[in-house]
Length: 546
Image 1: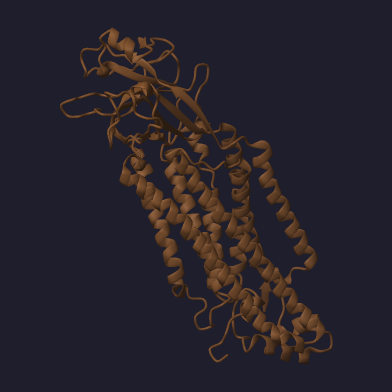
Image 2 (image 1 turned 90 degrees about the vertical axis):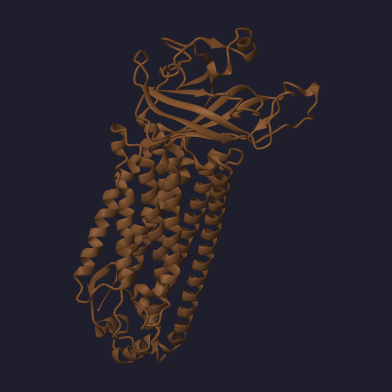
């Protein structure tokens, strides 16, 4: 029979492999910690108040706060009242980036958060359930003298959530409300050098538009984008890791197909895991530097979702195949109760993503966080996803415990063996247990990464809760996934050392082949006809009559 590399490789070589993978894991963390800058940067802007003197509302004009053809400005609304400028003729303009800077495709995405500075007035207070109607426009250009080209335009509604910390008296007038940041805009690529945001707050007393929203003094915008240096490090890692996983995956499947028996379920799932890792590794993001592909954020989420589904399903099947009865083993259908919820959860993630980033492909001002229902739904989704991830990890720990207990039951046969044979099986059991503990560690880090990623993305929208994530965490977890998948495919590949039971016995116990054969049968309980990748896999398979 042919065993797997994990049981046939010498301890010395196995230790060298483990130390090498550990060094690469440390390197992955160091790349993010020492080379890459922080993943994202946030820049704050105060919108400039421009005066719109165009009589024809159908004529489109862009108001630039600085540079060539800059708009006519006012500093305060008192000045506007003195000049008899109506609220409908005031445009809040913000130029991204700041003067003497340029945006870059390496920034990958641009998320903009909006916050109102609203002063308290006894005669103009914020009403309960106040809604702001925003006439938002986005334009771009690639030099400082060209005309602006419209990129998007939309009428949006945002719910005001403001608190006034002092008593509402005349003495406290002109003090500011404390308002929550509001989601404003997100674009999936930064293909142009300069962007211009124009915001109008149209007032219509008859239709109750922008009535009861208080006295807005200023609009602050926070632009968040991925750092170009982090993007380059991230792309370099993907470019390096893609051929590594692709080569080991082809090598692994070639060894599987060379066997006389058909591949078992565990081997198929390992190969599928390699495919999903390769899919997420392929650095198609390089094209986003040269092309205006606004769908790259959505595509990246889909790829990561597929990998999450495959990785979580693999861990369930990996443990389950060492627990199942021989009559149930090697059948994917017996895992529908465990894998089904994973697939359903991933599908819900996809629908949730399509509801926001899918719509943002045509309207970057859309946000599921804009309404109370959407905010509650998004918050509930993040909380439920975090709880489900924790429950999954606890269930996986329970399965690993069952596997260990199953193996411990088989170890009762070891004392009756000769010393050499007993040491042989104890070595196999130790290697397998160590791999299971590594699997649990990888699962724990993945769950932590998933929860922090969801919370970190959410705080961009609700603003007051944040989790600081270092670049080393991103590169380290990404490197861990690749190293784990690499190790699984390498260690579970069929070994080139082929031997039958008699030869194996002769290697373990010289001159005691007859006794060894009996001990082997005692340990594995009539499983000599069972096909599988490793001895541990065969040993843990329970016959119906056992």
